[in-house]
Each structure stands twice: as structure tokens, then as C-alpha cells.
Length: 377
Image (cartoon, rainbow, N blue to C red; front, side, top):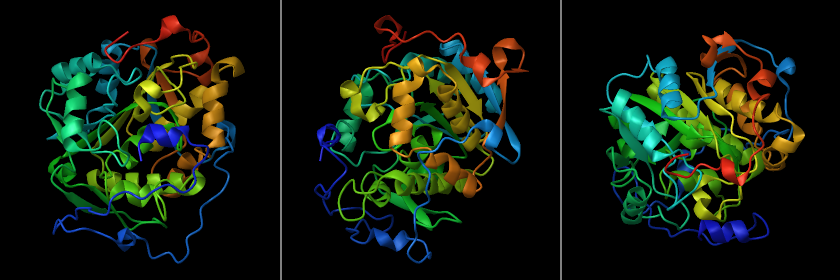
């Protein structure tokens, strides 16, 4: 089923299953039982309150550091990278959402090219094929889309092009391992370079979704996350937990050699997977965040949206709440994936701590003139 057709449907009910010819990591024979990776938790039950926002004053625990700049430009991206990149060594995988053809909201390819030219000359962009039928469903179509969208300045590794591998994770209630593109294991370090935005099913797409869905291969892993009896029948809290457990497999694989950047611009309520069919952007652009803590950066990104005026944040906030997407944050904390308390440091002002309110006080209401294309602003 094509994603755009699914998005036009009335709900998240039963739709057709994908084809059954799925490649395994070792035999390349059809895999018919993805439950093989299920955890040993008997009859797991999803958590609750994914539609409840927990204010910063109500959180407990340690604090992490999140860097912030208002500079939405290639220079701003490079400055943020410098703050969070000392742990990225050896062969670096850069996971970003390269988008459906002509998608208007993805991180501009020229920005990323500048980052690669200055800092990541030996890095590789990594992606996987999609679970839905679209511009990136097959490797052949995926490569055409990469060219259309300008991802031609770097090697791009479609990690499930030649098969998959199971990556273990601990502490999950849905999975003990996740099926991902097998070449993920070829890299020493990992950078999640994420366009922060809304999402039809996840509520929001931050670093957690970029990794959890993005590294899962297109036929096995994404099916494990999204489906039990039909293609898109897992939603709300259970979906957020499955995404987070998938992400945890990547975090455990790379250990300390992983960092995160969230770019808060062109934040439609729609995912970049909707391409030109995405809902119009109405949320103001904010800036770029960086951290070595995945929970802290996604929490800070959500907090910055909630700190805006109601007239600015209404649509994106409603999308997060209505899809119970905030369960991504609370479950990452339960899994020990990071801290939901953090210090926000303003790199535009010598790394001075900045409040959420001050960080968004000068954002401009979004207009058609504010829009940045996929090739720049």
C-alpha cells in the first residue's frame, strides 16, 4: 500500500499485508515469522499517557547538555556539529531522511554537502528502503530519488540493499533484537542528522524515529515495528515503544560513538515520507540542536515547540498529543536511553545557558515567504 494512499484513509485500520518474500540475514530465504525476535516478556502491555506532556519542572534525574543555535544555515550546522562530534571517529555513518522526490521540507542537500566538505569528507550517508510503496521502496527507485533530491555529493549506502542482520538489544518488552540493514555493522561511529517535524503515526519525528524506523530494513524490521496482523495496525503507545526499542539496538551497537543533531525548520505536521503531499508548514522555524544524549535532544525539541505561543505551536502540538507521540520520550527514559532533563546552551552567545522561553521568544510566525525548499532557503 502506498503511504500517500494510507494517509488519505480514514483511520489506522486493516489494510493489506506486504509481500511475503523477505530476505533474512543469512540464507536470503523468505522469512515468515518475524515474531522470532520478540522478547521473552509474556503478553507485553503498552504503557500509557503518551498524550500527556510532562513539564520540565516535573521531571527528575540527571541533566545532559543540549547545544542550540538560531543559525539555520550551513554555517550553523557546522557549528553545532563541532560541539557534539569529538566522539565520532573512524568510519562514520550519517543517517538522515533523504526524502521522497522533490520533498519540500527535508534538510537542504547543499547544507549537508557543506558539512561533509568541511568535516565529514570520509563519511557515508546511510539509508534503508521503505515499508510502503513509494519513491524509495526498491533500491533502484531509491537511487533515482537520491539523485533527484541532490544526494550526489557523498556515497549513499542503502544498508538493506544486499540483505539484513539482527542487532540485539537489552531491556525491551517487544523485542530482543531488531532486523536492520546488514551494512550498519561496517561503521565505527554514527551521526543522526534529523529533520525534526511532525509525523502521521509517530506524532513527531526526531532522532529516535530517524534511527528506530530509519535503520530498520524495509521488509523485516519495519514490519516488526508497524504490524501485527495488517500493515499499519500498531499505533499510539505500542508503536512509540517499538520504535524506541529499535533505536536502542543501534545505541547499544555504537556505544559512546554516536551523536545527534535535530534541525527545527520547515516543521510540517507531516513526515518527510509524505513528500510533496505533506501538510503546509505553519510552525515557526526555531534553529538547530545538538547533543550526545538522544532523549535530551528529542525532549528539548519537543519542549521548544511547547514553549511557543499557542498561535504558533497549535498544529504541531496537537499532532504530538493526538498520536500519543510523547510516549517516545517517557519510554526512552524507562529504557535508560538518556536524560529528559538538560541544560540548553546557546552557542550564539558563548555557550551561555538559555531558557526555553528565551530560545523561542523571537521566532517569526510562519508564512509562505518563510518556506525553505529542499535545496536551500
